[in-house]
Amino acid sequence: TKPIVAVVGRPNVGKSTLFNVLAGEMISIVKDTPGITRDRIYADVSWLDMSFTLIDTGGIEPDSKDVILSQMREQAEIAIETADVILFMVDVKQGLVDADAKVADMLRKSKKPIVLVVNKVDHVEKYMADVYEFYNMGIGDPHPISAANRTGIGDMLDVVTSYF
Ligand code: GDP
Ligand code: MG
Image (tube, rainbow, N blue to C red):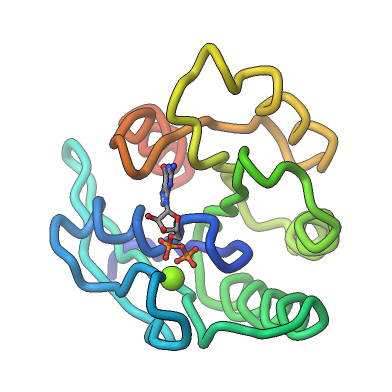
């Protein structure tokens, strides 16, 4: 069976956007209409001579900070149980949020390979200083991407597939 890669992160960081880019089609619903992100969605992704199963751990849109955190914990637990590599996504425009740090602690303890992906880096020069802030989570190097502009994706996939 193929390696499993799960995408975990707060609502609105761009998980489904990346999922759709990698899946090559619009499978996952990108937010704009709150509440309709489907629960968990799988796609087969090929990169160079490798392939893996990608899971978008979307979930319904939570309406409070507490619900966001409990839902993220649940996502992270599912990812820790089922994934070979966890792609942890954060948002450079929102910066390092408390819930990110808490989930990072959980993921770190799991000993699963974590790839820290910083999304919405639409202009590398403009945002690079903000990307470095995410080193403080203690889960390794932040990898900048823009899912919307499809930049940084190849370098990110090189890192992800290096763990297979
Ligand atoms: P999810 O809740 O983590 O699945 O996030 P979505 O994929 O639904 O995206 C949330 C919002 O962020 C949408 O309005 C996307 O268009 C936007 N978004 C996603 N990726 C990027 C990006 O690379 N740059 C910018 N500027 N916006 C993005
Ligand atoms: Mg989503």
